Length: 483
Ligand code: NDP
Image: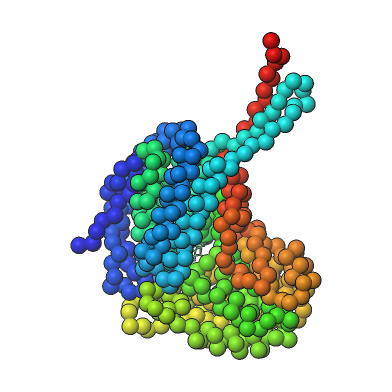
């Protein structure tokens, strides 16, 4: 009998209205556990308690809040091996990536622990004589965090840490495909010196409990990462209550490889950017825009590198790429392979389901060549271990191709020319731009977000997060004359 993992509602661990089973995508015989699905009554109860707890938390001293965030961060980092193993077991990313993700999640908490002590306002003289102005930030209130499965611990942490740092309560609805990581993080947070109900875990499907959460007038702000259609639905629900919203969604990131690029570096960046996390990253390099002068040599090395990749069980030594997260995702990926071929793209390698010693959702990483930027495989987010090469004749055409998308999260250029790198950095229409680095992989102390359909609302991470997790108050003070 598998262990039943509970939700954390109004400060208590409780069973739910029903349960779901969580299985390891690397080995479908491995049942990770049963996970409670919260009822709508439980959601309402925890939202009420969150409101009370938020006022108590906001009144905590800043060092007390700092200590809480620091303890969470330190524990995540200290337990990165153990929790990274759990994460890789349920999500399917290789163990090194799972451990790295948990460690990074810890860094979000320690970064925002320090930010608890750095909340400075502004002051000004009024245009009126004898009046001073004090501008400071206050918590926004109860924040709903809705997170995806591809970075189940890191994405949630880069939302939860600033939310708590700036004095808010959090109600977290994690992706139902990765509930074990969510329970593990909640267990750490629940043990801290926080008011009862400040932090809630409401597992359940997005369609049911997620939708109820985003429609609730008891929520003051919603931070979401996931797909564009779900994001648009959340925005539509949020606007009914004028709830503040922040959304990170899909993308179609391009890596431009110029004729003066270091070819081996370009291939390494493309492989890591395209197939890290089995290609299931909003920052994945899913379009490789390659200058004609190096196109054939690049493709030859890229295909050789892709074929040499070791696809396997996430927890086995030597695995470079794990399985796809779910059967549904695998089927969608295979549909995209068929679509690309029907559009005239040539599949240079991979793109098929793999038979492996363990029964799981394994797929060979695939490269499309002879593609145009007009093809659907180059316009829609696939979230798959698939990437496309698009041949261009000049730097100008490369930049135009990179920018020819409705998305705009990340982009990168590989070049030895300072002039091209600088021009690209200034003219790529993405929220993140990289030079001689992969399109994936960002720091925790600077803003993260995109343009177009990739993002909506204020940026995440670094000091930029304050814009979303706080509301500004402008105070006018007339002190009068001393007697
Ligand atoms: P979704 O957008 O469906 O899910 C993201 C989160 O939103 C999950 O927690 C989900 O819950 C929740 N959710 C779903 N529907 C609602 C709703 N109506 N109201 C509130 N919350 C909701 O992404 P998927 O996991 O289904 O992945 C589908 C595609 O989305 C991927 O193939 C990829 O293209 C894109 N995606 C992009 C991500 C990114 O980082 N930019 C991350 C994940 C996905 P639950 O999972 O429990 O249903």
